[in-house]
Image 1 (cartoon, rainbow, N blue to C red):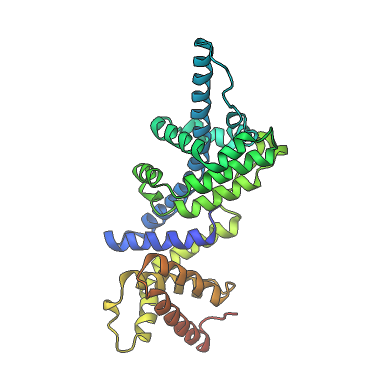
Image 2: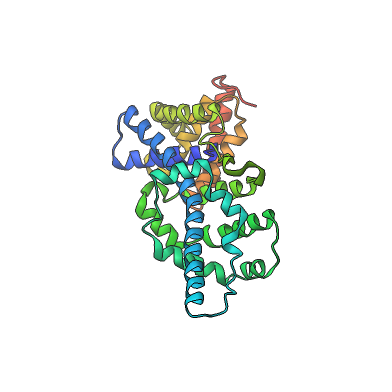
Length: 307
């Protein structure tokens, strides 16, 4: 689940936090970095569990309505298609998610929020169309939850506030973790039952090694990368450059010099995108030009080899 895009962002975030609070030892910094990656994976499970918790609230409310109808001798024609959703039944019984829930029942104290979410779902045109259709299929059951997540959970200010209160590490993680949750929904297969695999924390050992190696290089060799930047700023005072721009360029140079197998344009493009999101409006083009100039000089001097 934790891909290289998220790893790069995390390295930038932790390097900036380290700069703001005073540099720690490499061991302390690396421990905090790996912890932040673990928290991103925890957020992935937490958001999957949010869907299960909304479903649990829906089943409670439907049950109350049915009991009330029986007690008052009203017609028992309450729609129950939502709570009989086959995709949700599979997610609810997922072995990995159940193990996480036993240790982290994070939504148990958010009943009001869950109730509001369920009521919002009932108001959605796509849900009304789903509820009024026939029995449908597993694929339709899965698709309605994909729409719920994309339209009501991805951009939800109230949810963002709840998550921020639970962990500061989640403040900037949700947007990218949302893409992993949507990917997981699409991958669910009825035939897998409760053993449907969720996304692993890292795709493979190579990505885990990339994370650790990039972080160590960025911290240990920061003075060398700052020197490379200073040599290319000519008449500029490097201390007057935007702090975030400097950090992004240092980490980009750590990747460029430490990973010869990664094409130069891939590394530069990745950090230009990070600059657009985390620094000033002009940072992207400035960083692109600086990194291109420095990399070409390193290649010409034979210090690095790049495709």
